Amino acid sequence: MLSSLIGPVTGLLDKFIPDADEKARIAHELATMSEKHAQALSLAQIEVNKAEAASGSLFKGGWRPAVGWVCAFAFLYHFILKDLIIFGCAMAGVELPELPEFDMGTLLTVLGGMLGIGGLRSYEKKQGLTK
Image 1: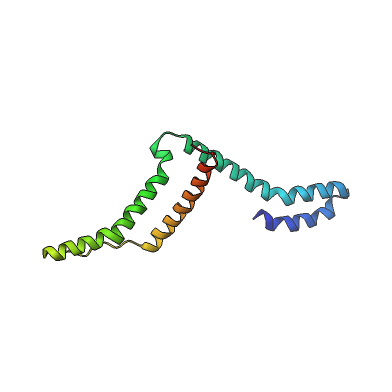
Image 2: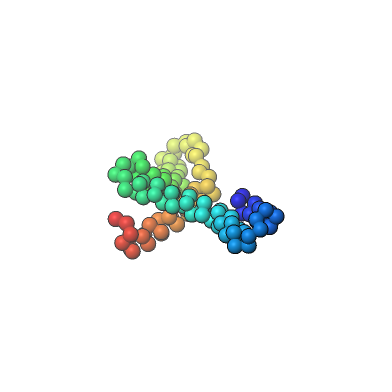
């Protein structure tokens, strides 16, 4: 949003600031304002991530593994257990109600994100950046 305002504001500098050096300094400051803001937000998020990773609490540091295990169980159920349950019940002559279906599109999106994050985590460990 700041980027869209920089051009018009920089154009107004010609009308109000006669000194060319001062005008160039302010224009440069305006041009880099959104980048500085984005960098500050990224640095703040990095500090939060460090605090979460350093925490021994499973509630704070264990959410990624929890999501990973949920995805793994959903894959296990969808591709293996469900078919084995249906097969076992058919062999035993048991009437089986319809088993639940998972939204595999959403599950694949979450799992893909987790695997991508896991790849970066492996890289960090290999480089000795984390425990």
